[in-house]
Length: 320
Image (cartoon, rainbow, N blue to C red; front, top):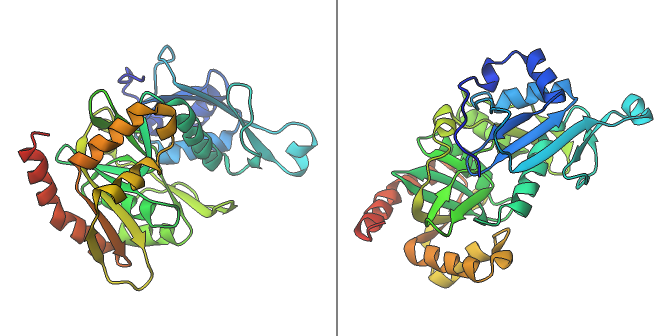
């Protein structure tokens, strides 16, 4: 697994042309907490897009280990002239169809998440947003379209430390969650919701007409980047569900519902076998859980904040 970077220079400090040259030559490593990713690309546009959402991340030493290796290069031949595209490859394979040449960042993000989900089997990877407060993790597992990413982004901009928008990465050995800190991928109307909610939030470019509609990536806060190697103990689970026009509803979950929400929303639950089962049982027994139905983002955050002292007291009493 990745270790703390040796260099204090960040992507945002680096000249874009010089960075594009490094990216095309030896490539570049990004340490996101629990893993590091090495990427090479001949796309100068990709260099600028990476800097827009990873500006606070340190440049990794070339000698450091990388868990995932990717290349994103421009398509060759007539395609480069007639319909410019970029192609992602990992371990000699091409897991996705080419993307338009002006959209290497979403291709990188989807490809990177796919590889992490395939490779990182020392951790239980729950499909969930994850944020931290008071040393405790709040998990937000949900299906697409539930408002998970919107709520995760909003929490990360209101005093909660972002661990991940995509992965609740639970270490069965230590009983803690680790960060897989990448930009929050927001889609369609959620982009404007968060822009209005936090006008100073840092976004990368918008990419229309992807398979998920318009996508934009919210950069992690500098403090979250600085603390990406800090783990968090289990705290609570909230199942978010955005519902237009609905008043905020906050309902406790039974353990069997909570078990299903975690186990069957995990990327590698079946791969881990008994370890996965024991990990989910452990989380269900440690963490209170609620269903949150909301349409008003501020009210949803206030509801979570109001319940958090109860979570903190419970975990303190349990010696967590």
